[in-house]
Length: 304
Ligand SMILES: Cc1ncc(C[n+]2csc(CCOP(=O)(O)OP(=O)(O)O)c2C)c(N)n1
Ligand code: SF4
Image (cartoon, rainbow, N blue to C red; front, side, top):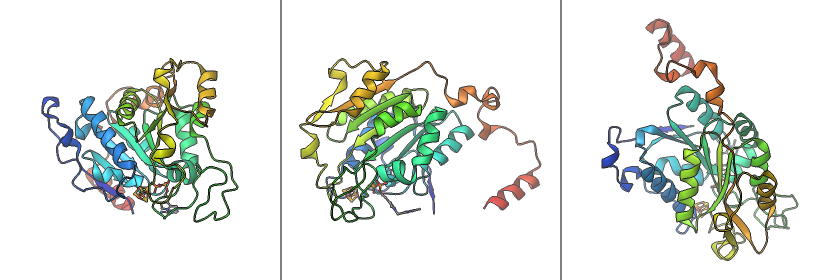
């Protein structure tokens, strides 16, 4: 069953914001050392540095360890169904396009069961930010292969080694229509804050795929594995408007693994800018329905 979280502070002025403003009431129950702690902290810092007030932001997730994140942050939040965060986030954004809507979750949630939604959300270029805590495993269900587990990886569900090819989210997102495509790493939190800020500010669909190690069930893709390999694209003069270079960088995987913004385009309108219904009159959520209170009640009771 899905659950909804409401922010405790709704009228704070930007001057009164501190980083703790974004701290949720519940302390995360992630395993000590889980990469998701760093992603949560990076998101809170990004919101603080952008001066966004808690009631201006909605964080929507699916199911998984990483998908517990909306409970740990003081914004509007919704913990939905496995793989469905982008469907709910799309509805919320169209209902109130003035909200900053951020979807969060894991690689199983987003690229496996939610792969269909991922594809269609990207092609629509709706103004959402999607943060995928990619630990290359199913964490919550105690360590089965996920769509990003490497070929040959031994897990609980593949004791003789994974026989499938993994998904590569970066080239997939570039050809799929996402207009801001980045990869971060939990071990490089300052850099991750900048990637998340860029994604939230971007008008259109933005993906930040984040290497966020599962220290309990993934013994392959560890901090020790990533630390010497990750190389920051922004330090290499990468041109984010060059499609072929972005695709090439997206395929690099070996002694060097690029992190940073691979691809960005600002010449395409986002879905809300195309949608004539949203042209004038403000967010749908605040418009008069044009029906009686009784009719409205009847409709709501049919849905509950
Ligand atoms: C429809 C449905 N199928 C399967 C599950 C079981 N399930 C819960 S979380 C999960 C995968 C979690 O992996 P991921 O999304 O990568 O997140 P992580 O726990 O690694 O952060 C699965 C298969 C479910 N909750 N609902
Ligand atoms: S099982 Fe893995 S992904 Fe889940 S909280 Fe523990 S370390 Fe994090």
